[in-house]
Image (tube, rainbow, N blue to C red; front, side):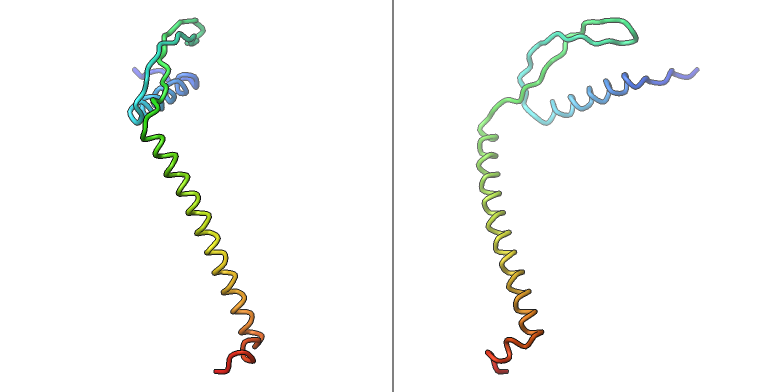
Length: 106
């Protein structure tokens, strides 16, 4: 005897349940009971579900500050990198056309 195959709805519900379980394990949560309706095999069943809300903590506040510093440092780094690459192109084309030979004698 083989088990009947899962329907598309059952697969979606199972994937959603697995994702919720992963999120619960990764974050501290505050649980509140909310009643929602789920339709399974053409029968209407009311199933209470737990809605997860992440708890605000000081670590999230420090994460915001860290990301702010990260992006400001990233902007500065990209500006310096663009300047250096532009300088390399200018020096490269200047040496090809012998513009620097008149200024600097080797």
